[in-house]
Length: 170
Image (cartoon, rainbow, N blue to C red; front, side, top):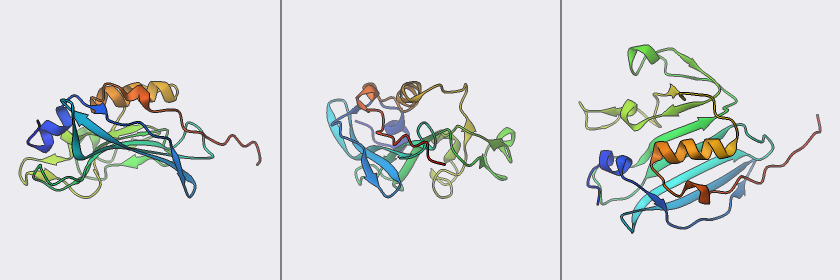
């Protein structure tokens, strides 16, 4: 069983219970508990969101921890933003090659890029450092596979495609 946030992120995980996407305002959302070594890790979740009326745009998957068993500040641990409608810029923080880099449309906020060994905590608020995904993601299923591999969630295919509203009104 993981004893640090590093170990939690690196551990092989499974979705403990699948559920349906729910509507919250203009967004579709999903929050799934995760298990490690056959045990549900209290406070460890895969959270996802998408804009209901923009299929295949602004899709976010986030690994987060809000438990008390593992020391450290809870909150987001890693995130993938697929086809964002706004670009991301790290401003002047993070690895030199990523500072001020305009990242659009897809990028990932890795635990390693946002962890500070100096403070022993995640830097800033809400994973401020991101990097481009290594290759373009073509479609929701490919996005799921990428997220599953990155977050080490071995049964990620339990996540169903959001029930987007396809509207041709202008």
